Length: 140
Picture: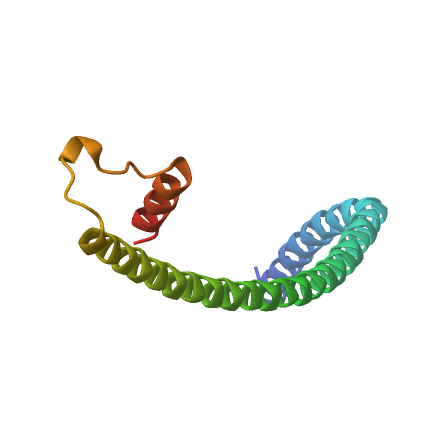
């Protein structure tokens, strides 16, 4: 065999291999073309889902801003109420202290003028006085 015949055989084998690869490639391209419409549908659905997600995020952002503004308002109201309650409590404590002092002074003033009584004949506090004393003790 001559060199030219050997080269022709090598080229023929290479062409056969190339034809085989081209056939495989053609089959794969045919499958890809068949699936192209499905891929387009999937991409369209994905784009639609992404748009819905973006719209949902925008709605959530708006709702969260409204909620934050509402909470800020309620927090302001709560702080004002807290301050009012602190003022009322402080004022109530002062009044309780003053009443306690006045009751102690009134009892002390009654003792020297009153004739000596036994413990059994001492005046019992009224229901209102007992409730007031109970409220004063609970406040402390």
